[in-house]
Length: 479
DNA sequence: CGATTTTGACCAGCGC
DNA sequence: GCGCTGGTCAAAATCG
Ligand SMILES: [Zn+2]
Image (tube, rainbow, N blue to C red):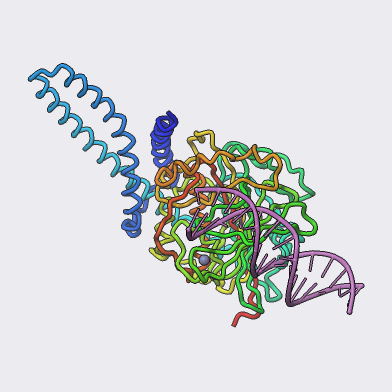
């Protein structure tokens, strides 16, 4: 039963997505369809196609089979003809579907391209606009977001100034570059209440499971001594950890001093000798926020779906986007992520001129938000990005939190896994974000290798939204 | 049965 | 040196 339901949902989603895609397209001022990345997408497209046609076909198929059965039941010689007829009809329909699919793909493609380009343009503009301002953020989705970063919170680094956008941290050797990407889902204008303290307050998580808020911050820093990169991500996520597409083994847990929530230590197990570790801790003030800090560089290729964040590679470029670009949000927001994957897998298809946004990044932060909005359906308009069909593992949250007594609230149902794989398309929302995050980070760590090799493990149920923000602070000790 | 989590012990760095 | 912390180890327990 459930499977049936799921299927239905899938179909619905697809439809929605289509709509959305088209809409987007329109929104994004006509297309520049450049063909590059097509081949990248191809794979995904393929996947999508399969899904799409699968779904639709599925339904029509059912009908047919029923009919067929009927026919067979009659067992008339005439039935043969009828069957053949139907077959034809079916085939025709299939063809039609295929075509439609193709068209859709194209649309998606174009949209993605547009999106990408826009992003780049934005970055450009940003750069030109305020060369001095090293910090910018791109916001995907709407809403306002405040820089949460509590200084003491994430140990080390952070000139808390992260928040102070216009502050001049660019001067003394510090070049802060921040990129924040946020997608938003839903109506809820986050602006809502900010019970936080003063100006910086996270979104309260009131809407936790809903499509709610987003938010995550990440900060990247390079340890001068070890030269190890460290990236920390804040994500609104109710799971015990964010599913970043990589495999981790927990090797320790400790309660940090000022925080009742224990901090968990993980080690990357994708490859045997991988030195990367990550620590995850819940934000004290907003328990819905998970602060994940990655440290080290992977000595192996990252799975495609892996949020590049997870690879705290020495990065470099970062692009900045306007933090307050509400208008842009619409674009970004609707943009399909699916293509992001391709980018990930093969970064540099056509990277627009975002040149030199600092390459010496030592500090970055990403805001991301993950919310689990399952309940099967998501809002058509902005919240769904079904096309993210590929197999991004999805950075959604995974696992239940053990420290939370009432963990039952959030995603205890692991139905997610069941949908794994392609259906991911549906979970698009989260994927989207994930992908975005990944893409961004991939930029960030250009050199990080991202190889294809998806391990499908998606939790389609939880969706996450991310806001990425990366800052780079000079690199005093870079060379 | 292998992989992963749990959890207390152990160790290193730091401030006093 | 001592105590506190954060981080890691590793044996035992679980999980799949
Ligand atoms: Zn690794």
